[in-house]
Image (cartoon, rainbow, N blue to C red; front, side, top):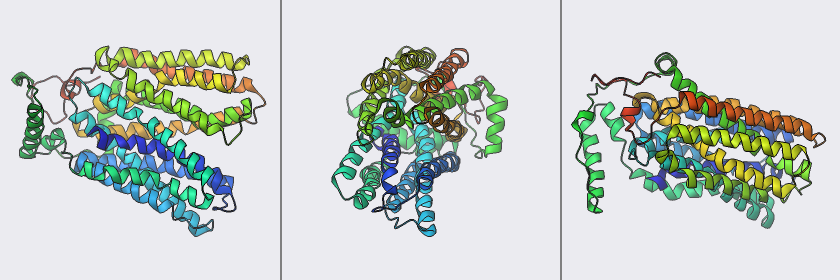
Length: 462
């Protein structure tokens, strides 16, 4: 399950990295000969596709099921990316085709976030839910490493007009490899129960239990006091969702929005301007700059994998607030060192690796938070809403920091920018301290009672 579903983040990291590396190549006469504006629009269209896909497929995931959607969204992504490689030129029709395919690919990835975070959290044992979710979200950076290495080989050792097309096919090849795995995964028993399909839910649970017992493990007896009676209800639209989020669960909505927005702003600001800092302030050759990304990505990948289990052992509130605040403090310290001229390209990269070792775990925990603190009926839609909000705010980062960087003539402006980034992350950490939900080791129903529950169990209202 982790392998089949977790590749969504690998694909997104791969996609973003390849698109960033291929962008300048598409300006060459031997490829598509696009203008800088046309190249820049590719990332914007992909981002818009992600937002649309998250909202559209998030609604369908709550309505039609997790399994149906994580198969469909992968297919949408595969189609969009494969078609991008067929772009033939830079006339109006060809550009329309290019942007449409990037929008479709983005929509597929955006839909993956909503459907898959829901499926993973609903199928994982409470004891391991935090580390699995955080680890899977962190594999985005594994995709970034693959994308960097892939484009380095394709663009430096092959004909450019062929290399950039093959670059966009790396993701679909990986996706096809796990397509069959997804087809054989069970539907979420929680979702089946919510839609009145008790027999299918019982069958899926029994298959899981038999597999566990066959491996030699013993399942603890069920605690009947935890039983909840569910009355299947119609799916919620986005207007109904907004009423639930901000009327019944205002504190949790503020928490989810804050964690998602702050991490998205920081990541988009640093990641998308990473090579600009290296080339404009440290004089790194443009062809070598992407290689520094590998070290940066490894630090981001290591954080969630190494720290993930602590979110289950130490607890959500302590670890989420701790990673946000520590990354804020470290970023502020590195900003002072940058402004003082102490850093060079290598030490700046090391500093970012250390900062984002913690920030990456914190960012992954934001996705964990929004996927476990809202009721079953609206889980995928809630993830979609907060993901879309975060992406919109995150889009401000690259533009703002790109302006601060300029031609590298004034490090003082970027110093202020880094302090702003640190302050933004600190806000996320402080909000977690006061509004965080202690979800570690708890059933999802204990964290957020389903809206359709008819028992007397108290509801989460924060």
